[in-house]
Image (cartoon, rainbow, N blue to C red; front, side, top):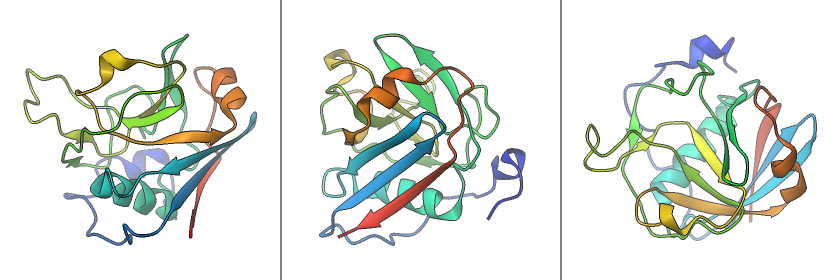
Length: 170
């Protein structure tokens, strides 16, 4: 496990090698003080992104990080070891833009097109939509959706902690 959030910033130079089986179903349980958020991950639509999220979760990367951005009726965002929207593990993940941004979609944040024309995703920062946001379709890699705990998602405030993310596979 990683010591402090700052130890996680810029910890790697490249995304992890493929470790998941795209034929399996992966679920992530994001535990917070307000309850659990269960997300069904779509390894077929976004294999590299799901692989990265599973890897970071299993390494404890997200443990103790905050939700640093909350935009009512839009998104909650977390996964930044610096806690200010500028941090990550030291790499990006190639874009896998396929899934729609339905209510409860989980997707990767990224830098803007002017500095990121390939639309590569952040290495660790993710967001969950609080409503359907079709204007984000075609621009960001969604890689799953909330299947339980949407009331928890809607209760998250800036500074709330991710206690841990547990991955299960079937």
